[in-house]
Length: 360
Image (cartoon, rainbow, N blue to C red):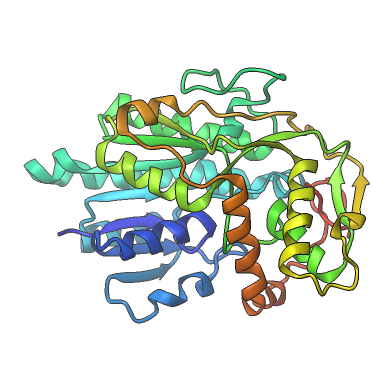
């Protein structure tokens, strides 16, 4: 059986997908990752000596590298997880997001299209390009309603604008060239191995350290939370059975305000670490100035993937959060190695050079 090519497979979501794929004995993985700040070899340590996993350090924008991998390994599918993915970083430095998410995706698509046209009969028919995207491309919701696959795009940050552009490129390569594409748009992911600038791991680590828990504005921004294991199970489902050219929204059915999330984290840490001298951790919650262009609410309607492919999330927010907090409690060395790489839990996204703690 031919392998699959996964880009960004040392990141948070991509790494979970690779581990799931290998555990499910679904074949070999060629894992292309640039190993930037969010890519982490430690997250793939369980696969260090597994012959079914090959980690290649490189960029999706390196056309000659991608071409060589496609020609050498002849993957039956390409899954594009590679992206600059943090809204706050995109506010401080949008150029990197355009370079990776727009130009990089274009170059990857063009090499994949070139490769696909050379495949013989059944290989060409069965090949898939699956692009992993975000609900943030749809913009912001009011107090009611949910994003569907037909919601017009209205991105509000450099990050979401760059992802919207990449989605449009994928669509164009299907409609113009016939490339057999699939696109997924997910809600907010959380779980083990997430880079600690994101809300959940940052708040968990600050709770443990007795640091302030900074919450943007009134903390009333609402997100739909999706456990990363459920998300990757959905992606595998779409790869197996999704209709070519279609988009599938993936959500967790777990809407929470940011302040509710932080409070639930505090209660979970208090319960799992009752020895902390600064408990209750909720006393550490601090309101800070909101970030520019902060979307108020996201919510995903995932009825299409449920109806067509039979997927729905299995984790509740309570069960997923328990697993996530327990993982960070048990993996301090992983966190320390992330910190030694340069991220110090500073606040990002003010479009100025500041060193405050980052918030939700």
